[in-house]
Image 1 (cartoon, helix red, strand yellow):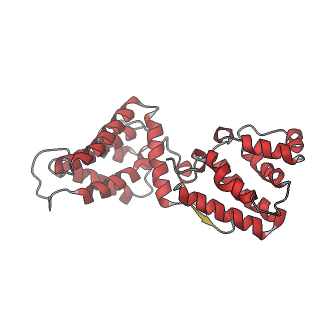
Image 2 (cartoon, rainbow, N blue to C red; image 1 turned 180 degrees about the horizontal axis):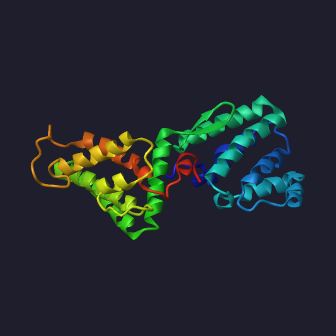
Length: 276
């Protein structure tokens, strides 16, 4: 599940639009207003004349609205803009009763399909922290489609995480961390101006840091991975305080993934936050 509306748009007819109109007193031209605010979100927007022909006819408006598929939208961000604008259109059409019903249906839809938004009044879809992290990982997967080495290292990470299902041993946990460091190295090595191959060299060559402390944080994580026995080297370490366990897997995985935008010049942080 992408956690985005565009991935489950086909479900909105049953979950939002039909329950919205299944009441007495709903204006006949409701889909005229809805299609009017939907049209700007389409990849291929109708001409002014074509739009006027549709929204002047309640039957054509409903048919055009019903035929709109996820592929017709310009992207997730455009679809979200429509969903927010639909609330204002409904409020102008009939007032609070219809717009409040719509608000509650959208809120229920978000909960049912575990989408990456919080819904705030009057009708504002705000990306969540968990949704932003999921979006970041999707963008890393998109990078893998453009680079064979990143794709291989990402597959290594997948397999390492899957292996944990067969036992959360120190060796499997260590392998997960090591593979994630290698994935960061593969991503960082593709950035413009980077000639280093190890994560330390890539960190020092990157010019995307907002403050030296951020670079030092990742260097310290790399130092942990390089010095802790069983991660990247097999020799004992005087700095080891305890055996590695699942706490470290969860924490280090999130931390390492979080540094990805600093190491890649192909990730758009605004797209990660709001969608394409």
